[in-house]
Image (cartoon, rainbow, N blue to C red; front, top):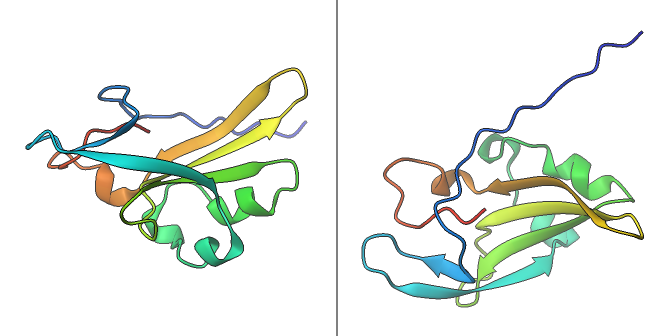
Length: 111
């Protein structure tokens, strides 16, 4: 019998908001959530992410979405992989960009 690999998640969500908020100034940035495209995928370096987003993107059952600010759509703030299972949506993975995961972060962790 093949041993099942269990992934443990270790992240904290600071607060739930509809936008990205600067933790020092309180400035709020409008956010957009769009489906990840092939051109976006080229900008994702494996070393900057915990999960293999290339693999998630290639899975035909999954849809991968990116979180960006409205003013800067080229910088991906976070990624989300979901699957439509007809009667519900299953979230496979969710991850914040590497630059958002440090204790000296400037923005609240929303993903």
